[in-house]
Length: 314
Image (cartoon, rainbow, N blue to C red; front, side, top):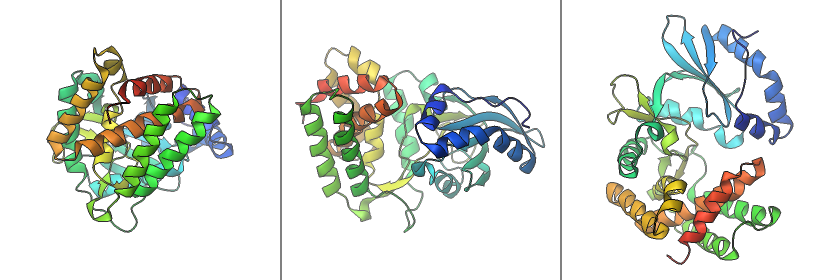
């Protein structure tokens, strides 16, 4: 048995239960898996960390007393490249890996501090850190084994939009869907393997955590966790950053102008085409808003409502 009772967040439980038989089996077997890794890696797993949505994440101590984080991902196909990214990065802009097992998608990582979302409320400060991190993270080399090139990603997002818009009662206007699908077509057509980077895939401020002490590879004071990992144009990662800010967009006197301003900051900091960032950001906003409805997460409707404010600014 594990050292302590094993509990998962409501979001993780919902994802597992909606993932079919593999997800339900993962929930059943989780306590035994935790206990097995405590013995195998000579660690003590303690308190679960809040906010985990796609796996079990908890504080741990190594045999020598070093604090660490133990993680078991849900058996989701798009998470299977996470260990590859972290190990190839070798701590450069990413959390350091102490141990890993690809079969179980298990990780033992360096302990980190609070997220950028918790420490930097101002958009310009967050963007400065995230763009600094991304320019480091994009140096991880792309090779023939790297997954999801840009054309496939754009088409996958388009498929989610078309399917879920109808399945969930058309929760946004046809104009929003039409624009998102047009952007998906543009980004797929723009795919160029020679311009791809090894993207994080989900570089929002909640996935950037403060290091506990200065170290090489963390010049900004933060590192990324939870990469999806894939080869795509750099505008994609920046579009994911633009996808967020729902509270700020809804509260802005001019939501479109506010969002365009964020897009300009991202482009200026990285030298990436702002229109490509805008298109990925809008596409990700609509696809994410519709996708999370599958798991009963009503915050997807907020993303769709904000998308309505952004149409007509093509």
